[in-house]
Image (cartoon, chains in turn cyan, orange):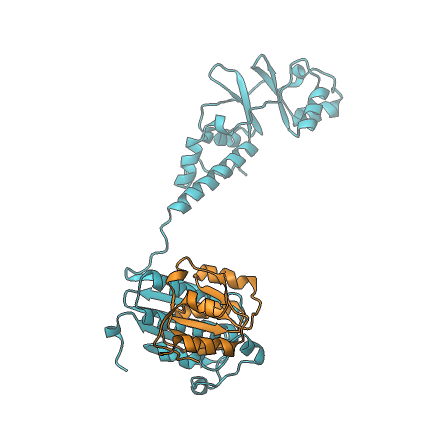
Length: 308
Length: 121
């Protein structure tokens, strides 16, 4: 398995851009924990333990001489040479990276050489840091998060047909009296902002409100969709039941199935559906035990309204 | 009392006559005029009214009173019988910019005073 599961030749453009744009110096650990050639293996073991690391470069005067990894320490423990100097057991066949290289080099090195860490040198061949797969993963993740935020902020809002200037869907809960009416109030505010005639605004808002309250009072919850175009306000209500047993009866004023509790809240007088129909230019209702659908249309230009 | 009409009266003057306190006051309160009154605790009754410059007189101290008033474009809501209001009610009033008043008078007396104020002499 690859150390870093990124194909540096064929990834998405964003990832490719990142791994070439980020330099090793942006990713590496700078506060380097190192040891000297004369330090004992035991001392280095302690350094690893105290700092939770698995490799210690051997550095003197910023010059890199070798590296002791956790494998070397295990060997020292196994063969009993814990007090030997590092110099004697360090890896000297070193693969290093240059701080100016792009991150893609590091990813490539991790796969190519299989080491867990690479010392990083500057142009003067001085040790300036160390890079591990953890550094790469964290910096890539951070850079990707930033990039995704950037890309998301550029996403255009959901395109709506040219002549639609409001399209909103509200989920309405049964007995959700705290929120009840919010959708209709929003519609009213929207129409007010667009300075529609007072009576038209009232009719549209009343239709929406009656239907919204119906969802709250009578359904087990549903969806209220409001579409406003230049020509009309269309309110679509879909609920999940229990359905209206006798639609014709429900359309009659004063017929109600609401209980006293709901009536004490000022609703359920049996006027909702008839009133919604009264203020609508078009009104359709269909109901079954699976749910009820209501569609109400109010034309914003009176001449568009069908003759009644 | 749905139809006390024909004479309009500034809301501020109405508030004074009803000894009402203003609990939420939109910035344009001095420009508000009352021309019609609807008095009911049943919001369904309010929703069938098709008039302008309505003052809603109610004892229903709930968010729905404010929301309903906003829907029909009422000028203000006056809570009768000095009822206590839930705090959410004033938040909704502020959000929808609907003036809210409260009077200690019962609904009937409130209506009687409004009737005298708004009827043609």
